[in-house]
Image (cartoon, rainbow, N blue to C red; front, side, top):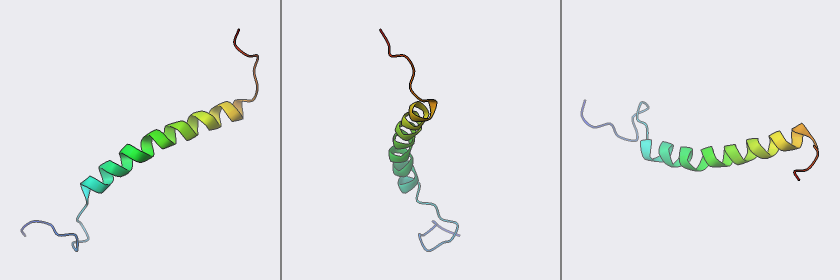
Length: 47
């Protein structure tokens, strides 16, 4: 068998996966938060 190479269809580049998650997770959180407040609509402002 040996070490998996990028040409192996079962090979996963975990470094790319981790970097993708580190960049996509905060971005998704910001988008979800903004979408939630926009969807919720205006409420009475805080004092």
